[in-house]
Image (cartoon, rainbow, N blue to C red; front, side, top):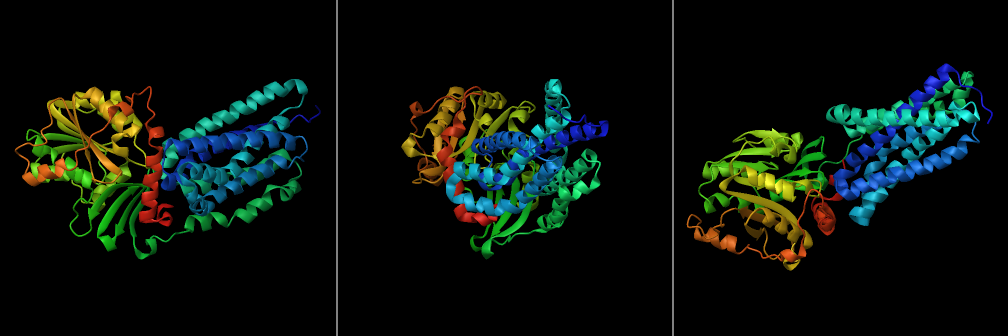
Length: 515
């Protein structure tokens, strides 16, 4: 191998380049969920698609970059970096049309194809940086190993710093679109700088990334200033839209049906009457009857606060104080400012599984109502998690768990698995369906260490009849006990995720779901 020994400035610049591009790879991969989640949710399929696309793009970049590095002029590396910057800048601009175009493909294929179209170009260019950098850093054949090891070590360190910077600093402060635009500008400037510290002849800049930078300069302002129709064709009014740490949280009014909706990505987590503010979700009405079955309930815990209707109803009708746990600060804010939620107990904002270890029981009633992004948090539905909840219940306490699924005449493996898991922790379990006659439904599990009195004298006759109509039988043999070690729930719920997303898209319209 014949190569000129790089100067100290050039070597330092080279390591800075691979550090920044290594960070850029992880920023793009992590931001991918924020771009796709409002439309396809945050299921395992979305993450699998993004990771697969990242690996495919990097592999292509390594291969093409290696061949190009053996043939390219010295300006090749700066040009590649600048082109990566342009490709990143195209992501927020192209996201909306790409997501809408892939909608007919369904959840799994749509998530994969949209990730491929949106992120593969920029990640492929970034993958090409490594082979170029190794060649530029190597002056002798016997130094290839050292150069390659140093380049990949610095690139990996950049990925680590990029991940921490994004998760701990940028996400809580800046929206994903602004982060992508900032990353694009950084790469464009880095492309010009790479030419300057690699080439003594400054005229080479005009043959490489500088024209790309000049052409791209107007785009950030256009992208950040771009708006969208928030009226849903006149049927909807978006009252609030916030990109939180966990997704896009929206408050949407539907005046035609006098409804106010609370959504997280493509999930409906709250619904109230525009005129009265009353809860409009049937399954929550079932839960609100529990204190009538067990008059000893004095203290409750709600995991998955949502709009806060259940906590307020328990206080209004039964005088019960309710502690709440909500993972998303934006949801908690929307509940207070748009749904009139007034806490009646301690309010905790954090992941349910973590907060369970910090709560002090006993509770007479625990309501488990966690659902976001079109999928359930599976780690809250395992044997271990439900055992933790039982440890917080009083001797006669009751657990109410909401679960969205197909009935399939009581033979759905997902529904049966949750039934078996709850039954492994609690000796008495009853199951109710929200809307009798519909196969796709909300299912409410009531579980306790004591028999559940569905015909309690404290229930009014019409309440007993209403509950009796919704009692459902399940075949537990169709399911398996879910544990932290083995939990196939997301796989079992694939059809549910597809159906739920179809329902939300048909109701709200695909246009309204894309930021």
